[in-house]
Image (cartoon, rainbow, N blue to C red; front, side, top):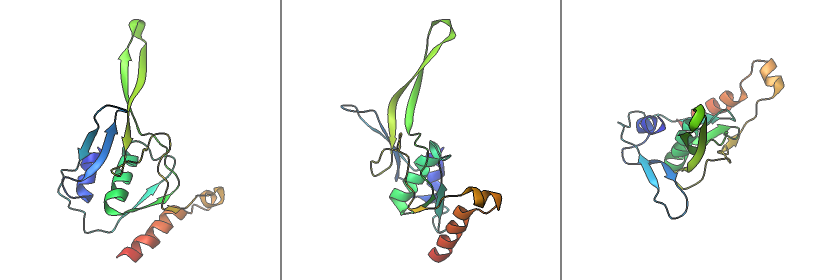
Length: 145
């Protein structure tokens, strides 16, 4: 999904993510193939600890390839590729076989993505129904136009 979405924001042939299988094994590189129809729009990406997996891959690709700013809090760090092995008796074993890397080779797994502009939402903000991350994103994107 991240690869398909990235195609709207990046030209065809750009690296979205790298699947790294570890030492002495070949990496799998995933590239865009979309129509780049949203390239003219300024963008920022909001992230927090709920941002995981495909959203982290897309955020990392946009930052590495287009210099898009990530705003909010550190992402979850779900950058692993897992395989399920069925066992006798209906049990199964899930093992990590690879890790996702950003186009510049930074691991997402277990470390997540650090925002370029850190904005935490406090309990006070939640009570006041105030979204400080969105407010900061709108401020930044307005200045990008």
